[in-house]
Image 1 (cartoon, rainbow, N blue to C red):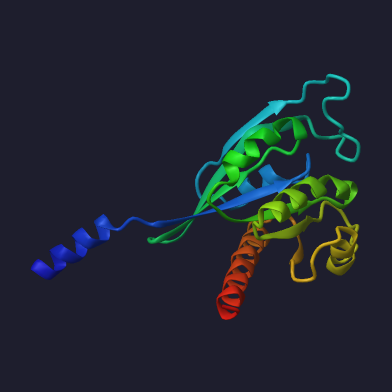
Image 2: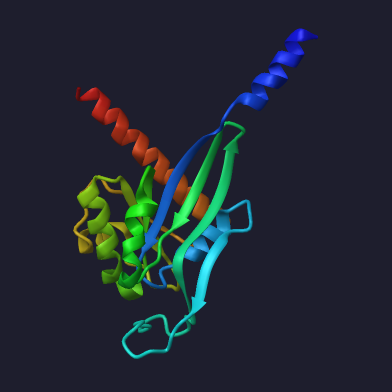
Length: 198
């Protein structure tokens, strides 16, 4: 009886490990959609209606977009009782980039969403993570039938050859989950390689 009680008390006293993952990319790339598709809780979203002020938001290529994230998106995935992923979607417009330093503290890594309709919009995210040494992968959100291939996109973005580029649909829960798995596996490979070189 004492062993059963101590097992229960041990289970209650364990603090789960929380891994923080950033979801970044340009305006309209699908960050809010990705967080919403995989989160087991109702995601926190800070979507607001676009201002309509000329020059405030470039909607070319995403003309149907009427809202924007102004702080962050937040979601959670429980892997086991001892492991949880916390997803933080960053705002896409440069006027909100002052939030990135706070959001990125303690992050395991990042997923940079790329939209082939506006591929150049993911350059600031890539530059940000490269300069800080934060591991990241590029996930190409396939909104339509246009396919350029992961290798072509990696070359167009001038990525290091070891940075994974994956294609997916942010609306699909399984596809979005697989993107997160790819990031975690990539971070693990980097850590193993770094440990092996010591």
